[in-house]
Image (cartoon, rainbow, N blue to C red; front, side, top):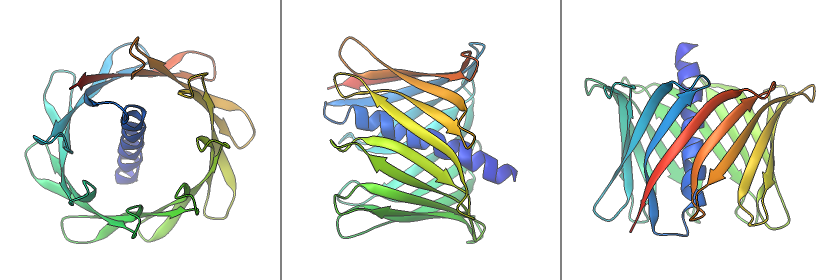
Length: 235
């Protein structure tokens, strides 16, 4: 269970990292560091992104507040710059797992499998797309069994509207509902539980250059639960 919990946390952080990169992909900017804070303002940890000379992101290191290394990963990429293999290491450079990423003829990721050092598959994800090449379903399997799956819907202009998460028995248990500002940037999203109560609100902040740089999560009582601060450079 601990391995599953750690994976879900890291998976969320990586997903959010992809959102942050997407927010800046139309500019010559790239994120270099992200710092994660607890609700009381104390630092939880921070990550440093690794790039090649051609500005291709190929790794990330996770650090404790004192700067010591927690763990890290390195990516192998193909000619299109897509990840084919991601290898994870602990603080003493021992390989702990690796994932193999698979794509369809359109270059869309259709699955990735995580392997333990002994070659055992620990978990895998599968992805489905519509005719517009939009992600419509993400399935997560852990130790050979379906853990949950997510269904995506979009606005008329192609932005994510809602993500609904279901249990293996098709019972719905969580919704993420997105809102956008007048510039069509993501303003915030709310997380709702199956009974309709809002559990969290994640709000996105942009600097005077219009670049995403901060995200704050408020709990159901309006108190700060987490805060993430992004640093970037522009060429």
